[in-house]
Length: 289
Length: 287
Picture 1 (cartoon, chains in turn red, yellow):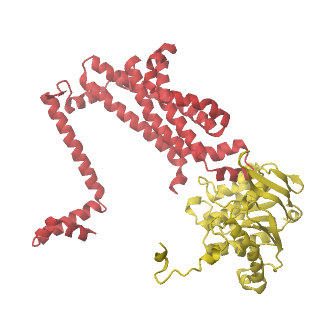
Picture 2 (cartoon, each protein chain N blue to C red; picture 1 turned 180 degrees about the vertical axis):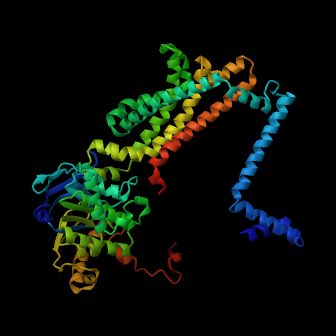
Picture 3 (spheres, each protein chain N blue to C red; picture 1 turned 135 degrees about the vertical axis):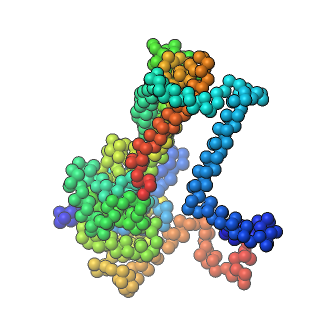
């Protein structure tokens, strides 16, 4: 395969005498495709990131203004020292802690309600007929468009932020649960029934385990959307939290802290999604069998 | 295990099955009566689409009869239950449970404790030569092994009758023969009633005490053939004159029905049609 690739390369053909060059190129190719391919992957990725940071450093320190205005953009170096500073400030941790608690609460409720309602819709006709219209009507409305109404409805801003965060996670979880429940093979349900399973057993011993891969995918998507909604809610109505921290940095002209907030939010969202995958890992051992 | 000999009498009387809406109704099964007496191995054969699997599902309690009665030991059948074990055509093992947990499922539903379940499951798996695989997941097993687990799982719930819906249909012919031998050995040991649906004539002849032949749709009983071959049987018996005679008889019954079932595709002289001389370059001339 390598041979063919080389001979089809016109450059290699022309320089017939340059045998050493051709074998060297062959060796490089083999190395890239072989066991140490990941080293090259990491080197390439690292170089690309480094190049991006250099470019950022350049435009930010020169205050480049080419339609996009980089004059007020903090340099990577500024952001780095702001991050170190933030890590030594108790307030920063308090903001992170509040956001994490909000996510834990809202996402937790969304997961429990989402799975329960999703299973009921997927399994019981009357439930589907009654609830599906609501889901279809409300689902396309982005969670953050609820912010004004939520502030009007809920007694405190805190509750309206929790509500928005809940909405973000709820719909992906419900929809994935419905899909997982409906996709449960009827052969498995029939098998369980002929072995003496009652409706309740079928639900817990067959339908839920069968829908679990789909449910956890919905939870992972929901986790991302709930961070999105939380940050929007905190920016608009919050008095604490990492979204508030980021928006506040803008208003206080602490531009480096904007990027610190952004990086923190990205990291938290990634970590919490990872946590979901980590939690489902032992439950879905059979899928990797 | 002897008391089972007196139980497991399946009686189907004048069973009629209709499908579809009021406008477009299809009569799938028309006036079928059959018996599986305690400890008997009974097969149901017929062309595809004759309603034999549906009939089995009625006995399993998964499909409701339109007319007629189906009972087990005199008790009318109303929904599925563990006294009628089912082995399905497709592999229906729970993929998230290990082999042993699959086998334990029926016992768990009956409320048996973990240690009882484990002991029973391991005994049965041992009999089926699957003990080494008790902690495997179904995905890790071959087709024949999966179906053996399926049989063991149905047996573990101590059914009075075993209902088998083309259980070996998806297996290659070698595995099939081995599975038939295993099944006949296990049946010899447990002596429970079996209703076995298949379209494989040799399979039905080899396994059964009695074979019901069904007609093309709507399914009726066309013939009942008693199998007198001595037991225990082994695959060597499939060469005996008695066996071949039996297969010939069954084949004669079923051939007309298979043609009738394919009528739309193969007009009246369908089979002769394949005798057409297509010339030296073969099928290419036809295209």
